Structure formats: structure tokens, C-alpha cells
Image (tube, rainbow, N blue to C red; front, side, top):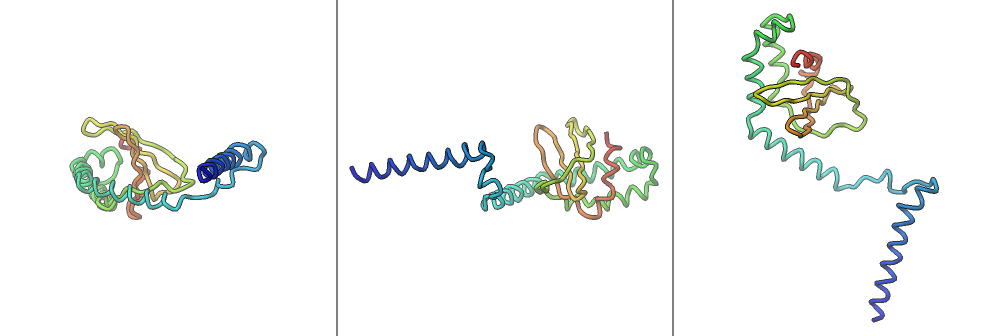
Length: 163
């Protein structure tokens, strides 16, 4: 019986501590003492999620399909952008789509623009950021942030032509 009473007192004390730390201290202007604490497992979870998403993306063949769609529309892209077909070919090669990977949006990245595109009956929005190493694609209710290879970053302004 003595152990039960000690456990109950311990639970009550823990509850009071939690209420004080997360409820009362912020209202007194003292802030949450754990506000800047980052869960060490959060990074591992995010990395695992990105690894699984990259495996699924590779298995889906979507990168190859996107690359082929660009190549098959080379003349249309050249016409709309005013680029020579050989320059469009070089741009498609520089996009290096096969090496784009799912990643985590960097802290502090601010959106700079977006382009709405439709391909194969699917509507998508591509968002660019002040950090050109990433873009986010929103399609079918999902947001996927992709790491953009260095060779492709200078071509991100052309996303506006996709709309």
C-alpha cells in the first residue's frame, strides 16, 4: 500500500510540474524552457522518411517520365522561351532530373514564386524559394520538397513558362 501512495504522489507531482512548465511559465512571460530543445529522434525520423520517399520515387519511374516529357516537348519549350532547340537540350541535360531527391525544407526558406502546371491530367504547383537548392511540388494533396542539383538551379526561373 505504501508503494501505491508513493506512486500516486509521484504522478501528482509530475502533473503539477508539467502544468507549471507548459501552462503557467509561458503566461508569466518566462517562456517554455524546452522551446529550443530539438528532439534528437526527430532528425532520424525525418531522414528515414526522406529515404523511404526517395526509394518510392525511384521505383515509380517518375523522374524518367518527367525527363522524357521535357525531351518530347523540346520544340514547344524552345518556341515558348525563345531558346534555340540545342539550348533547350542543354537545359534539359543540366536539370539532371535523375538526381533530384526528396529532402526537408530548410529552416527559414522563404517562397519566392510558384507555377501551376498540369501534366497527364494531374494539376501541380511548384514553389521556388530564396534558397535555390530546393523546390516544393504540391500535387494530389501531397507536398514534396526536392533537392535541386547545382546544375539545375539557374533554370528555376523558367518554371513560370510551365503554367
